[in-house]
Structures are given as structure tokens and as C-alpha cells.
Length: 241
Image (cartoon, rainbow, N blue to C red; front, side):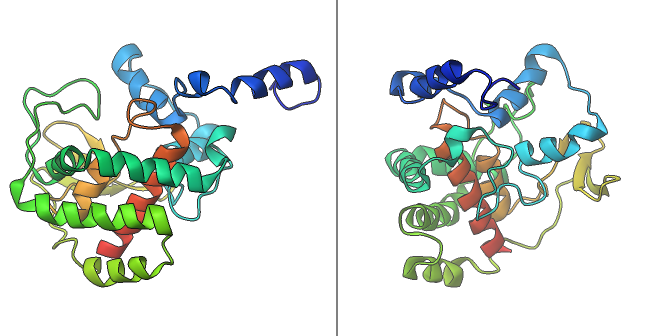
């Protein structure tokens, strides 16, 4: 590790100054986006036990994308000014609301054909129209929580609206549930060989998870805003269940 050790103070100042420039920060990605994009270009990664904890945090497993956020394994810029990042995420949702709602409703639709090597790429998928309105309501509550907080009066209304509305939890065809050696639950498709860490059902929480897992940085928003949106989508998913 070079940065922040005190050995190279001028290098620290140079990097800090870089991160004050919006023209630079606008090009920054985050660890999750980079890790999910690498396999489609360079082939699958290979895990070592010593990296499992870091990997889980980057991938949002074991509560890593839950509120309040733990910034231990995320780049420093994500931890700066939570309110600003929340408002950026809310602005992105509000200004592209119709398109984002339809995109999320793909989570309750059928996968597109042909499939792609990139795990999360599904450009030919179609939204399930029956879920567009319920997803719309969920995302309105998420936007309000991003602006006002999850302990606001509006968040209490969200609890009433969303509680228990996820669905019956029935898995799609060919999917079964398994558990890793470390206790992490995952789902595997015996037909395609695909793996998912979100239950592959055709219901409302699956739509929010579909959107959460496909937030790209910097394509959609900054790294800090993306982390806030992922965490607030998980807040809504918890309410649904």
C-alpha cells in the first residue's frame, strides 16, 4: 500500500487534489462494477479463502449493502458526504423514472435470448408489465427515503405500503437453493449453469434486486450515489419481505 502511509506525503496531496476535481471523479468506477465487468473480458476469476471477506463486501453479500453502510472495504470517495450521494441517487431515479421502472420490471420477466457471456447483461429481456406499477410505487418510496431518510414519516408510510408484498417466494423453473461452506446461500440453475445470490423468483423483490445488481459506475451515477441506491433498494426489499 502506498497511499496514506505517510511515506509519500506529496503523492498523497497530489491524489487528494485529483479527487477534488469533478472532471476526474466523474470518470471513476467502483470495485463492484469493475469486478463484474472483468470476467466477460478476461475470463472468470479464481477465489482464495483469504479474499472471501473482501469479496463478500464488494458483492454486497452478508449485509454489506445494508443501512447503515460500513465503508471498511470501499474506496474513500464513497464515504464522503452521504447526503450529497443520496440526493444524487434520488435525482437519477427521478429524472429517468419511467425507463428505470421498466428496466427493473425485467426482474419478473423472462430472460432475453440470446444470452451473453457477461453475467448481468440481458439487453433483450422484456419487462413484465404486471409489475410496472408495483415497481413504480417501490421506487417512489426509495426516492423519498433517499431524500428524507429511512426514519422519516414518509418511510413509515413505505413500511405500511410495502410490508409483506414481495410475493409467494416460488422459484423459477430449473433453479434450486444451495449453501456455500461459509454459510452463504445461493441459487443455481441446472439448465444454464447460472448462479444467483438473490432468489430467482418472479416477484416484486426480485425486480428491485435486478435493478440493484445492475447499477453501473460511472455509467449511471457516481460510486457514492450507487452505494446509497443499492443500500436503499435493500431497505425496500427488506420491507417487502
